[in-house]
Image (cartoon, rainbow, N blue to C red; front, side, top):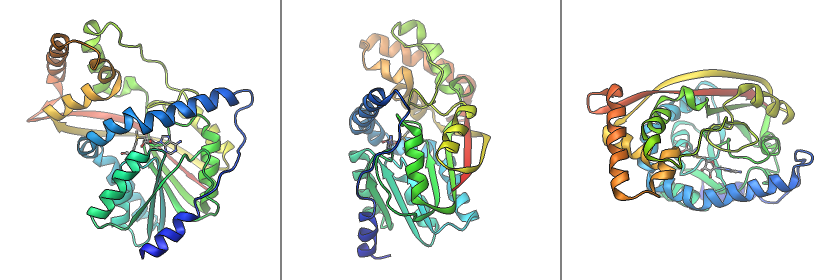
Length: 306
Ligand SMILES: C[S@@+](CC[C@H](N)C(=O)[O-])C[C@H]1O[C@@H](n2cnc3c(N)ncnc32)[C@H](O)[C@@H]1O
């Protein structure tokens, strides 16, 4: 694929359109959308960029799963929704003979993704935009994938309708989302271990699509109606349990950077910080396998057809 062709195709993403939002919730939706845009163009983007190596290592099994899937269905034109710094888009671009496009609301993350494509000499395209309001203007993808990139919409129906419009008839949708936090050991264990040292640690709220965030798609009974209302069919949601592993120090970095504990640690004094690290190290002991900490992540694989 030439750069000329890539640029020409990127332009077809332009333009805005108005989509129906949940009745009676327009102002609230817009406020949530603005908060999410600010988050992913601000602190969260910085954290993801700074820890890109760690996250890509930890989440590689999900990437491999999606790459296997695009191979199985012989994808030629793939859209990666909420692609972040581009790891899955790049992996797909390497694996298929065709076109891989990542879309993300975060300008800094898209900038990193483009830089990676350039330095790794991979022909992947990256587009910056909010999939809730971006008009994809034509059905141009035979496969849509996402690794944890679809749980942050204030109006998921608008987002999935837009994505549907970008998909050719019969196109595959395959995305990986988190199951509820209680099924995801490591974060919960870290929260429990640190709780008495971090009195401001917010309680875990049940994730729902109404409250965008990591666990917004944890309840499959709430995900199916969103996809149905967005014209997707043959919806299937299957549990995925997968062993994730990182060297011990990296796993400590992961839980002290992300999640509720990570959010609190920036606000405590040095002594408390040290005590939390000691507690987390002890809490990880049962999960140590040689030099690594290994745990079972609990996700859903959501599949549908356009
Ligand atoms: C948890 S990160 C996952 C990033 C990437 N898929 C990965 O696995 O490394 C979620 C991503 O969704 C993006 N995102 C959130 N809301 C979005 C929206 N409305 N439109 C497009 N991207 C969005 C964020 O900017 C972020 O990069």
